[in-house]
Length: 69
Image (cartoon, rainbow, N blue to C red):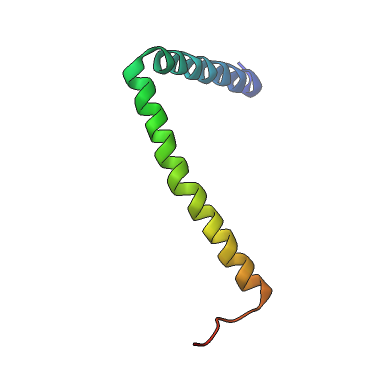
């Protein structure tokens, strides 16, 4: 088996496992609720953090300093 064939076979196996896991999660109500709740928490924490970091980086790149009170 060549390296390319091995990589293709591994990708097919991983894709099949992902589809099977998604099917089980989407057809089991308790797992579906858990997955959607985890997605809400992840998006609720990561998106605002990302936006805050981008704002900070833009401020630093603009060369401005903090205002003195």
